[in-house]
Every structure is written in structure tokens, then in C-alpha cells.
Length: 612
Ligand code: FRU
Image (cartoon, rainbow, N blue to C red; front, side, top):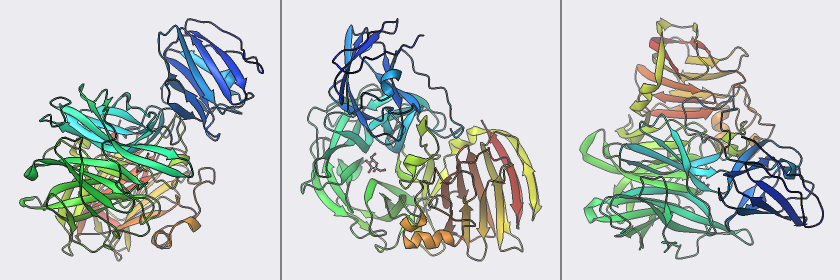
């Protein structure tokens, strides 16, 4: 396949023309901020050159301008912009890119786009988009043997923007296939987060077993204002393509609230109706519907709950058996907040209580905050619909404090491992949610290295490329702290240990590798006093909002704790006692970690599994 760039004649409204088997184009630049790219015999894509630190230019094909950081001085990478493939004539309108920008020399036409991995931090077994930016998991739904993972996606660059629902599919929650984006940004706005249901009884009239997606349409308005309203789209081909409902929006805020987003919809069988929860600034609003199109307000819950101030986002809500007892069930409300997390930035909290079909009543006081995961990189976590008997959560593995700055380019952001949630009773009588890696992760295990049972110090090398699982039983020894350091030959390390006196599990990534991100990670002054205190208690070499340690209290005391650690190219996830503690942290080691140093405790049945 041949690529061809056009040469441009600057100045007047004309340009050079070029031809190839991939079509040809001319650039028409009537003014400094407007260019028309006239394309003959359009191939599949215009390949657009990006420079990440530039402001956004606008590129328009079908009436919806997309914001693209087109290269001004240098090209960092390229993205494919789909054209009307096969059309005799096609044209792109590009606004707000100066005539002397280097992008004009680098635009190409092509029928293919190379997605081969170029990133050393690309995970081996965690989901990432092939290219472009990703944040929240959206529309998680299981149907006909497939788990759909939609996600907040920018196909036109690796920073946040142009929200689409990207799409990947898996049969087992751990091996994913990339699909075309399912729902694209349109003239109503960005396609923000939301949920999906399977309409088994065709209540909406789109078709039996249609998958129906609920998303927030977000539009920026003048004067720093925004409009957020709830919309639906339906799929009759098992989630591959969606048709936006012509009656959109289906729900607007009755009081003009500007932060009104991330609809979660579920079937409430006792009253034969659908329920929608929408995050409404620092509150959650509940609505009901019989047909998924007309929604009536029922109640609200949440004002004053959790750390203050905060912003509620991405609600989820489900019923769970307490300690596995199907006769004793409680409702769990997931509230993602940003900012306000215990370690700064964004995090996922939950509340346990009752639901009567109209109103949620929380069992605990507003300031009684429970975190679903104690690491710094676990956000916008929501669960799969249509998985009877299992509650499966899918976190986005980043933090809004630095999500746009992490040291990757071809793609940015990944999902943490999917987790199965359970409700159990802790030592102090509280009902807590555990989050264990789904059992399907066992299928990832490759070669096992038996590290045996031992006391005190032990070093081991593991033969892999930085993707492995480590499992062991841990008992306190004579030292105050016991655990394991996961390191590379450069001395970069993550220290994971049990602080016996404080009854905490700690993960310290202060010396884990790249922690500066070009010195742009916000300094500690911007963290809140509470989070600063928490991480200074455990961090060896704290110097910014990334280089820190996180810790979790032990909820059920025991002589022996079971420890499971998942290491990938740029993440470490800790699960203690089947997910009673979950702690998820990004890391960017300059070389893969392949050394272990156990210290201070009695370790039994230690095994390392390579993951390929
Ligand atoms: C959470 C969030 C959502 C919103 C989406 C936009 O991370 O801010 O509230 O729908 O991201 O991408």
C-alpha cells in the first residue's frame, strides 16, 4: 500500500493535487484558520498527524466537528480519520490550524492503519484500546456468550476528547477483541458514560432482546456552561452497531442542573419496571419507567455522603446476598467521586442499605466512607448487567489527577482486572464489599514457578517479561513488617507489605520507575490534607501525587492472610483474602520487574505464574 502526501501552495485558495491508488487530495486554504481538503476517490482513511501538546483544531466530515491536536511543529504519532470510502469526491473541513503547521505536509490517505504495538508499557493481559484515549468503562453487558466492554474513547488522539463509546468484546473477560467504536460523538454532543440493558421483553419496542444503551449527551455551552441529558441507542446485532433513538433526549434535569450524567439502568422485578439512577452533581436521582423512553422522577439520595467536597459520577446499584445467604440481601450503591479519594483525585466508594423500589436508605452515617479499592488507579467502576448470580465490576485503571499525562502515546489508559464483588461481614460487624479478580483470570496462568514455604528473607528471579501473578500465604514473623519487594535490575521497585502493628496492607510505588511524567504530576500541595497525611505515613520517598504509597486496613484479622499480586507492564494489583482488600496502582518501570525479595514474615505455598 502506498501513502501519499500532498504538497501545498500556501496563500490563495488553491493547492497542489496528487494522485495514487489511495485516492488524491488538494488543499484549499481560503484563510489562515480554514482549510478544505478535497479528496478524489476516497480511500478508508485520512491519516492525521498529531502533536499532543498543541491545542485542538477541528476536523469535520459529516457535520460533527472532531477536536484533533493536529501537528504544528512536529509529529508525535498519527490517527486514522474515516472517510466515505469509495466516494468519488469527499471533503474534510479543517478549522483553527495555521498555514505553516507541519500537519499539512504529513496528511496522508490510506486504506489501512497500522495498529501494531509500539509501547513498552502496553499491558500483556489488561484491556487497552488499540490506539487513542480511553477512560470509564461504559454499557457493560453480557449477552449470548459475549461480554461487551464499551468505554469512553477518543479515536482522534491519546488525550481526553471527542467522547465516543469504543468497543471490545470477550468470551471470558480476559481476552479481548477490538471492535469499531459503537456510538460516535454527534451534533448533540459528546457521548458520555452510561449503561446497557438487554430488553428481553421488548418493553421499548425496538425488538426482543435488543441491547439498549443509555448515555449522557454532553455539550459545552458558552460562558463555561454545559448541557447534560440522557439519551438512548439500540442495537439489534448483538452490540456491534447502534441506532440513536429519534426521540432523544429521553431525560433532562427538571432544574437545569449542569452536572447530570452517567445513567445506570436496571430492571426492578418486584414492581415490574425499569429504574434509572443519574448522578446529579453531589447527589443521585432515581427515576422509573415501563418502556425505557418515558422516565418519572422518584427520589434522590446521597447529598452530604462521602468526603466533602466531591463530585458524584458513574453510579451503580445492585442487590447482594450478605455472606452468601440468599435470604438476607442488601442493596449496594456505588458512587465514584472526583475529587475526594482517600489518596487524592478520583476513587470509588460504596454504601450499603435498603431499596423499596422508590428510595434508597443507607445503613450507615454520611461520613462513613467505604472504598472499593484502596489504590490510586481505580475509577469509574461499574458492573455488568445480565449476569445473574454474579456481580462483575470493571475498573478504569487511572486517576484524573494525571490520567492525561501518563508516559504512553499510541494509547493512553487501561482497565484493571475485572472483579467479582461479594458482600461480607467484617470483624466490627460492618457489611463490606470484597472485590476479587474474576475466576477467569486463572486461565491466564502459564508456566508456574514454585517458590515454596520459608521464613524471613528470600530472593527469587522470575523468568518473564514483566507479566506475572504471585500467590502466597503470609503470616507475621518477628519483624513489624513483612511482605515482598518486586523489583528490576535498575533497583526500581514496588514494596508490598503487611504492617502487623497497624494492621494494614501497604503498597509503596514511590521508587517504582518513572514517577515524574515530565514533572507534570501535580505536587503534593494540590492534594488534600487527609490524603497527604495518609500517604506520608507509609511512603518511603514521597515526592509527588504519583510517587506514593497507599494502604488499607485489614477488615478481618487472621493469623494467615492470602496474598495475590498481579503484575503487568505498567500496573500492580494486590488482592488480600479473596479481595477483602483490593489495591490497584499504575507503575512505569524502565525495565520489567523480574526480581522478588520476600522479607520479615512466614511465607507458605508461594507460586509465581508467568502470564503471556
Ligand atoms: C468519569 C467521567 C464521567 C463522564 C465521563 C466523561 O470519569 O467524568 O462522569 O461521563 O468521565 O468522559
